[in-house]
Amino acid sequence: MTPNLSGLTVLVVEDDALLRKRIAARLEALGAELVSVGSVAEARRLLAQRGFDFAFLDVNLPDGNGTELLAEGAFSQATGVLIVTAHGGIAGAVEAMRLGAVDYLVKPFELAELGVAIERVQARRRSAHHSLRRIARAF
Image (tube, rainbow, N blue to C red; front, side):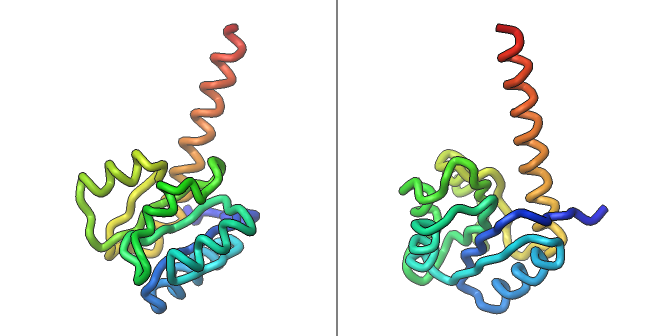
């Protein structure tokens, strides 16, 4: 099943221009509105101006570590941040999740995984929302 990302705004922060274009093209083909940048500084400027539903955030960028944006609280709580890195490992994944990331993709990955990752996050959010509603009704 092909995910439909219509109506979602997605920020891609990736310094590899070719990969950034491939990610953007895939997500746009699924209906998402895309903004893509190649550095922490560019992402910081954008995040100060607007919010996003999701962000694909590379860890190693030319001007710093993408997870700095998580540590700074640059993303709104409503943004689902998915970490993308070539240097995968349990410690890095745990740290990214501790800082607020909702998923972690290790390069190289199939472009088809991008939409699926967003759908997985949306499903977890819906499930959490329904659980909170059940708890609230119990009181």
